Image (cartoon, rainbow, N blue to C red; front, side, top):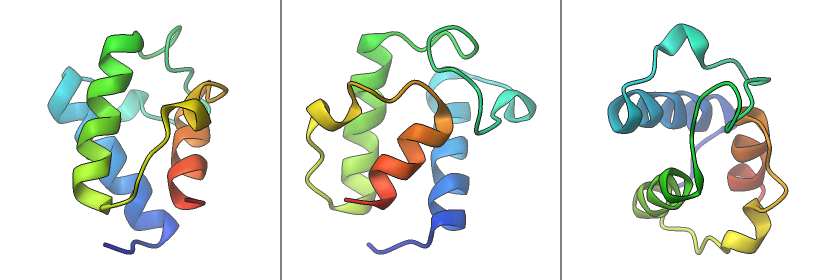
Length: 80
């Protein structure tokens, strides 16, 4: 499924709210995954699995190793 960047951002934010019970107000593009959102490596894998199901894109976890913020995640997925 091809999404534009805004649709992708909305989807990922909604996913984070559903998976990790985060407050949508905290989901700024600059939010740091580990420090601000308390998403650990196991949570990140779960998130990647769900994103892969939705986007039908082959997601290499290596590409996410440098992603530190929500904006980084959106950029990586969008550019796949």
